Image 1 (spheres, rainbow, N blue to C red):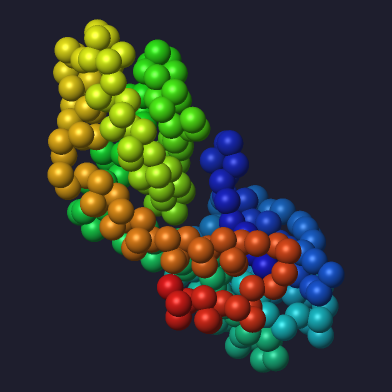
Image 2 (tube, helix red, strand yellow):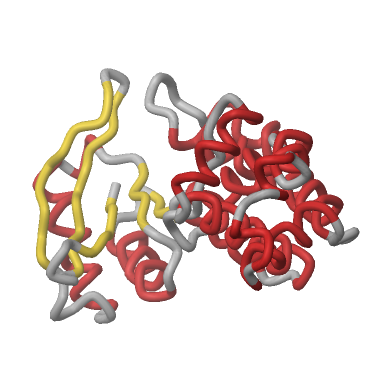
Length: 235
């Protein structure tokens, strides 16, 4: 398996891992910054990894879904007839989820949910007031990936009534935030925006099945292959 990522110095690093019945094992890591877009050099890297592991032991090579990896995978299958290349399921589903995010209704729900969460967490007094009613936290959006943003939407929706209680409480009405523009805007989202809560509910309903599939394929307790096609059909 080939796993590409960027380190803190923004270098393109490719990790090579080997999966077998007893588990997944790290093989090596390569700085591929100079040739990450070069199909032939990506092919050379995959070819060398297969050679190192032993061609007779390799059945499948899994990489990311970008065009350069796909073309390199095709070259590898031409060179080594008995194995096959596939793209990473988790990466493919993540790309699907990202496309769903482009729907305007989902964008609006996410922007407003982020605005509410950030405003509350940026004011310690208001955060304490919210906790009084919710008895728990709501997730703040710490990443741009929509699959992660799903957690923000879900936790916000689960706190619908406590959030409404927060912004109608005597403590809120008597505080200074009530008369400030940002405070008014956030209160309006929670209490008066008729499209907000339905759009959050719709976004959750749309994305939750795919997030469940992502959790399935990312789990390392057991192989997901035997469950994947059924999970996608259900999604």
